[in-house]
Each structure stands twice: as C-alpha cells, then as structure tokens.
Image (cartoon, rainbow, N blue to C red):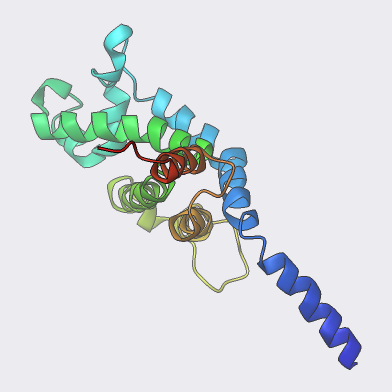
Length: 193
C-alpha cells in the first residue's frame, strides 16, 4: 500500500508541476465553448453599414436595456448618450475580450472583464428579461438539474474564466511572447554611457 501511495504522489506531483496545462486548457475550453457564442451575440448588436460598430442595432438596445426600450416604445432616438456608450462598449467587449482570452493577450484583465460581463449579462437576463419568473432559466444550486442557463451554466463559465485570472495565459500566448521579448531586452547588455 505504501508503494501505491508513493507512486500516486510521484505521478501527480509531476503533473502538478506542469503549470502550463491548466491555463492553456481553460483558454482552449473557452475557445471551444464560448468564443462563437459571444461573437454571434455581438453580431446581433451591430448596426448596418461600415460604421455598424458605432451605430448599434435596435436589437442591441433591446437586449441590453429591455425595460428602458419598452418604456420608450422601442424608439432608439429617445435613448441617451449613456445608453449608446454602454451598448457600444458591450458590443465591442463581446468581440474583443473573448478574442484576447483565446490568443492570450492581456489575459488576466480580459478574463476578469469577461467575468464582469457575464455577471452583468446574467443580471440583465434575470431582471431585465424576466428570467426570475422562470425557475428552469434561473435554476438552483445543489439540485439534480445541471443545465439551467443562469446559475449552472454561468457558474461554470466563471470557473473557466477564473483560471486565467489566477494562472495567467500560459506559455502558448501573446502574453508569454511579449514577456519573453521584454525580458530579453532587459537582459541584453546595455551600451556604456
């Protein structure tokens, strides 16, 4: 039994020392499961034409400010600068933050931003779109049903995003390339004055 314990410890200590596995896997899982979800959602918010990224669609306002849009009979012209800025920032965030996570650029900040985005998205779904009225949408922790869109799924999203916040991007990333280039310049001999 002692040999089995030592074998176990030796094997899993070796695995634990491979610090690149967890952040790289988290980014790969994010890319495989959530990248296209967020990009597809972002596409629904773009307005028409070349400047569509600055002129959000009616649907963008309705998705992000459902009650405010309802109160103005879905007339975007009655929405203010604040609403426009939030909708544009949210739309850009749906494209840029997932991209940055996948390529590993400013990964910790990008993943932290996505966690905030998912929290705001969830609160909007619950309060703005009435998700609280539907138990199957809200879900419940520690029940036998693992697929409610809000509590269950978004908690798992948060975990996938928390790993890069804590561990960084790993060695297969733009962050690692930038860091190695910066460190190489710091280690290079400095010319004499």
